[in-house]
Length: 247
Image 1 (cartoon, one colour):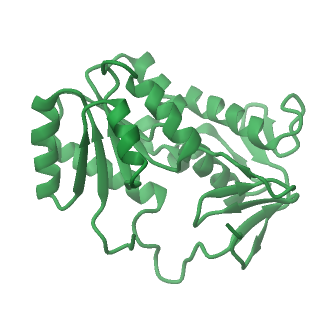
Image 2 (cartoon, helix red, strand yellow; image 1 turned 120 degrees about the vertical axis):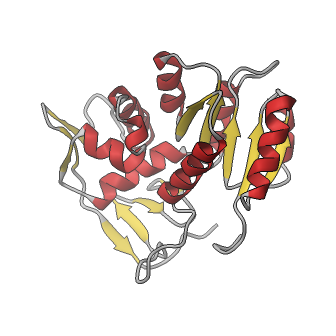
């Protein structure tokens, strides 16, 4: 895939009356859309190719969207937008805590969905980087390596550690601002965008998940420190190495 290639979307929804016209609309907006009527079908299509973004309904027969989202963020670096009739704040919080990038409630204006898709893709780096900026280097801290181009986290023994899209963005925010105190509003802006500004608990839960990935003792973290009344601070020294990880 190149930056000039069309954005590919996997649209997962069991309601054909919504899925089919929405797919037609998105295709007319220049996206390449693959449809799936169930989580099982989505898993099958994902085994053949990887889209740039997944639009995912929550309430589906069989495996629901929350379960599929959990699978996607644990095994793939894929941004996810929930499209669902469930509008309760608890549902939104659960979706964000699972690692979803955004949440839109049915019925919605298709143009708003397109705007949200483009916002999420910009946030996760699908669009071309500005001139003079490149991800052709590694973040290195205490033997750990994060490859921002391939979105791979490697531990000091050289083992790849699975990391969700939300965890990747959170870790990168810390690595871009080492030794600085970042409050929840700053982290939400960097990680989820302003659409999630009401859900500051999602930051705490994502930090807990990230700590389980990189800390030896989560009760006494050495990397991500809690600053009382202030937020969080990444305590390790961070360097950049101008070489790519071997795969």
